[in-house]
Image (cartoon, rainbow, N blue to C red):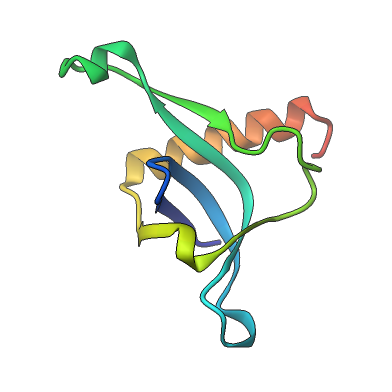
Length: 101
């Protein structure tokens, strides 16, 4: 499982498992269980605050991947351990709620 932090040209920061990347010579990505990182008001004001984890594309079929075109990606990096732990915790909770596991 490769969990990556993906910055989009829109300014969104997505934390997701990368399901498929670079198939057929393309740099497009297929994301599984993507969540968007939403800073709290405290963080926006420069204080110590939490990050909210919100499903990205919440109306999509939960069992399908989300296709992201390469031209919409600003950066891709490996998130720190805290983000990875929180991602796993949040996605596990969400998938259980939806009855998918």
